[in-house]
Length: 140
Image (cartoon, rainbow, N blue to C red; front, side, top):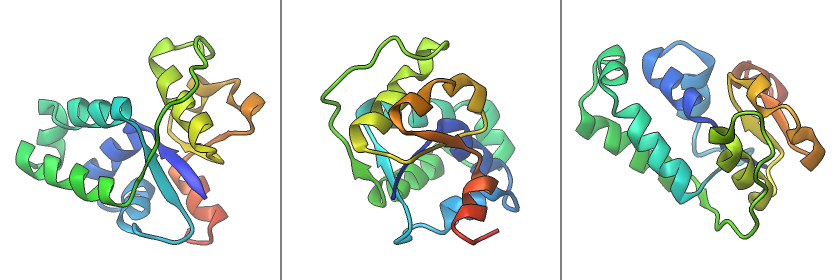
């Protein structure tokens, strides 16, 4: 199934090696899920994961973060955005994530900010935390 990893999931994966986010990312590639990516989400991953506070929290260099993102991208389906659905969410900065999920036919947006995606169920998409997703696929 296709899923979108919200940026906060990748941040959490880099900050804690024992958390559900890290376990989920470490499972890739996995036939049970295919992360999807768009240019906008790629740019957000790069910008946020390379922030000094995120580099320091994971004791990583910018070069290591770039390598991590490139490896993650190798497991992703690259989705072209054909239809815009803006504005939909209460936080306009999250609309591009929902647009990606809609255009890619995703089942889930995996995020810690489920409230920010209120209304995505109208498109048949559910928001879910990394641990909830691991429970669904039997990995928790």
